[in-house]
Length: 416
Image 1 (cartoon, rainbow, N blue to C red):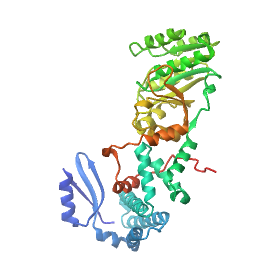
Image 2: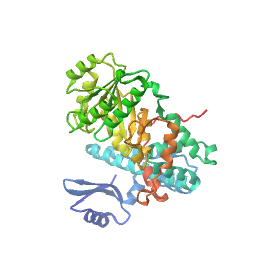
Image 3: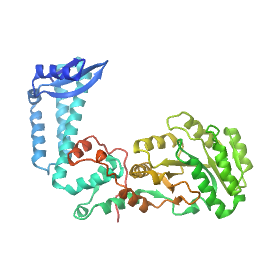
Image 4: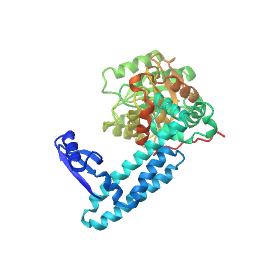
């Protein structure tokens, strides 16, 4: 493979060198910064057809995809893989000392081909099935990830395409959301529950809301409150005020030994709620907090508070950091402040988190509700993002889909 490397201080100068050496039709294989300089790998467009007869076949496939939407994508991917495989065998035979570099070039070629094929496939989808394109934009506007949206659009039955299609998507999302059926999950069973999560997600207020519900059900004598937040100024005082209003004693602990002692003294309580210190998901203290709760000697069920206003990427980091040996479930907070909630629901579905409650305000205990999955999905689509700066246009969808993988998604799509 006649691949040439060009380096220059700037991208403009590097591209000028490519044009001078290979002409205007040069194929750019990669463009990256190396030690403060721009490095471009490129090859002559004519070389692509001269490498092997299969290169012409790849170009025919590209043309066939453009003008014949019925071409199978899997067939195209297979032929593209065969092309790069033949290129590798041919080049390695002629350059046995440069196999590593050749493999990198082949991977770059494969990525370019597959992205291009995927992009063309979505262009054809838009032309053949414009409703799929509309549904994709609809899901992205609600905050759902591109990978989940693509997975559902690919699974959309042909019978649903003639109808709205959105009702089917909502049904699948609802089926894959996990929620508690009623409050007996906590209020009747009782036990020790720790509310965990990053700073500012509303753990203390949510703890107070839960405490009020427990008191209304069983009375103040059956409930105990514990706080591990010795870092935030006024954290203990805030919970103590709530406890005083409810007639419940609040205990403060500093470490695992304190927690063991406190839980041993409170073993006769029906329900114990632990308000933990807020820690960034990237702080090593998260691991220490998980270890403290796990080593308390009792079955402490951890409920992760997820801020509905956060992006999907941020929530994904939070779940990975706080997962530990496993979470009992989650509580969606700040629902009233979120412009979109698709990202939060996406993470709950992807991570198979059981949603206990949703919090939508500061009032105690009124602004805490048992999670209703049908309501949450309907609300997600009602809160569609309409801001033009964040709204995807038709021509932007293929480029987005070309770089979207489907790894790590397992959905139950059968509605029978």
